[in-house]
Amino acid sequence: MQDPLEERSRRIVETAVELAEQGGFEAVRLRDVAQDAGVALGTLYRRFRSKEDLLIAALAVETGNLEKRFAQRGVRGADEIERVMDFFGLVNRGLLRRQNLARALIRAVSSGEPGLAQKMASYHQHIERMLVMALRGKVISEEGELIDPEPDVNEKQLAETLNQCWFALLVGWAGGVNDQAEVLKKTRASAKLILNPSD
Image 1 (tube, rainbow, N blue to C red):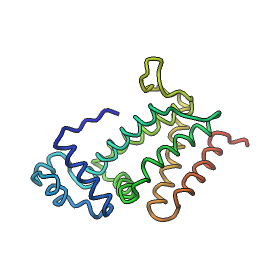
Image 2 (image 1 turned 90 degrees about the vertical axis):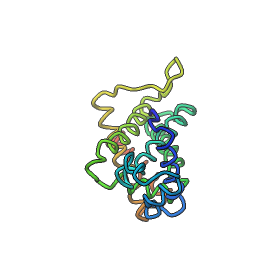
Image 3 (image 1 turned 60 degrees about the horizontal axis):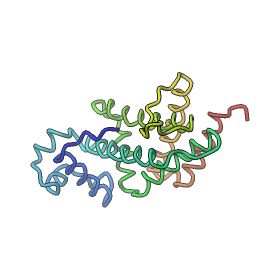
Image 4 (image 1 turned 180 degrees about the vertical axis):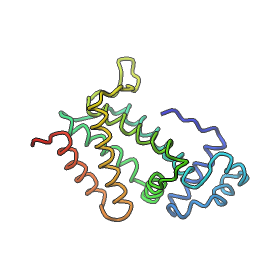
């Protein structure tokens, strides 16, 4: 995932991340973000239309960092289920290590705000792209680059369904329904049903 943020936008996003880490979604007030980032409120609004837009930009940065970690460590496991769960373990450790921030990001990406649909779809596409790599067991090309897979119809459906199950469990975690261990346990159960439906 390319990092499209210029320096001022990056400073705004980093400030929003700091505020979200401290106090979650409610702590990300755009006036406070602008003040702490040292920019005018109008400058912030020219770059980000809402708190959700700003937090989704932060999620894009987090996803870019995840892709770098994924490329560096690869994917482990002898079969599809183990590789998929290795990937979800990596994502969960990265995303949920800062719980206030994670809840804020999940709330933003779940907002359903129409103007953000394309950015939210891009986030899910990146997760699904990595899931296809996990299913195949190949992350890095012979040239040492992160593979950009072109999934067939079956792989695309599997990745979409796995992502939807995992994301629904994350929303449950953010709302206090599941703890972190349950997210992975239930994701594994879903992956078994999806990948090995006859077992």
